Amino acid sequence: MGYRVAVVGATGNVGREMMNVLADRRFPADEVFALASRRSIGTEVSFGEKTLKCHDLETFDFSKADICLMSAGSAVAKEWAPKIGAKGCVVIDNSSCWRYDQDVPLVVPEVNPDAIRGFTKKNIIANPNCSTAQMVVALKPIHDAAGIKRIVVSTYQSVSGAGKEAMDELWQQTKTKYVPGTEYEPKKFTKQIAFNCIPHIDVFMEDGYTKEEWKMVAETKKIMDPKIKVTATCVRVPVFVGHSESVNLELERPLAAEAAREMLRHAPGIAVVDKREPGGYATPVECAGEYETYVSRIREDGTVENGLALWIVSDNLLKGAALNAIQIAEEMIAQGLLKKAA
Image (cartoon, rainbow, N blue to C red; front, top):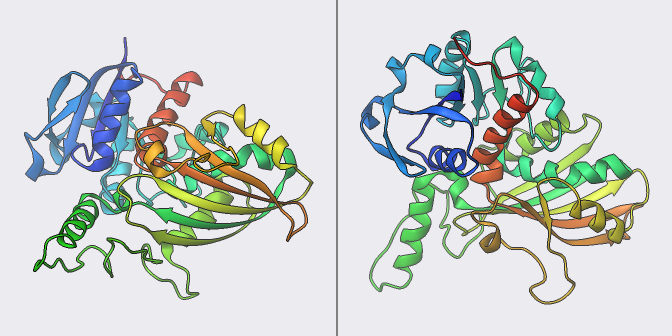
């Protein structure tokens, strides 16, 4: 007897990926419900070889579901996650709404699987920001081995992280550059995204950092270690799928690049592609559609004591969102924490 799974936001980029990952990983589900807003009732979405019609979130009876994978934005999560949890259905939420609530665990299964047990306080588990998820997967083995004191990270984030409208805008602006006499003004972004880089993701805060940068700081501390110092610069780049990160570490103890490379090769969820030759590294093109977090350009940094630098690439719709949520559900089953409703 399998589980009953509800996917809220099933028509969005991440929701569709959740359906794909559930099918691909053969998640033990007897029934999967595709849920969306009222305007999407009847919209068809794929689930393996099946086609499911969307139900209305507002009228669905969540006592019929054991687990809810939610990717419908913070406003929906704030209103609906507590209601769904009160029905006995465990919510794994992909928005930023619950990540910083002390009664809600923020989980990356390769990094802090034991934190899942805290879900019973609200029946909610939070999925981290896409950039945070891939970074902590790569850094956890290094932190365990040598202790990370400080992280300096610059991200190169794809437009899919901003949704379908953002992907459409990049596509339209790219096309217009090759069609004389056509113009496409920015709508989703503050500046042209095609053939450009925009050092601005989410809103600006009083200290000059953006909310996206603050998320990486707060979430890394909550997931990995509150003592780690983190500073981030988050940049949107004209890539459709796949986030990249340049990470510089200051460690408590020495760790040679070769030792770090070998350690990461044996760590869960990581693929090391690190040949010191042209093309001997991972890029977003190679990581799109892949479950692993790719690590390249591993090298020692002599400008700080015990310094290490590396390049991290991952599919933001998968490890950064859909895949991580489903891995949390799988970990709950492995720990015997996910109970089936009567």
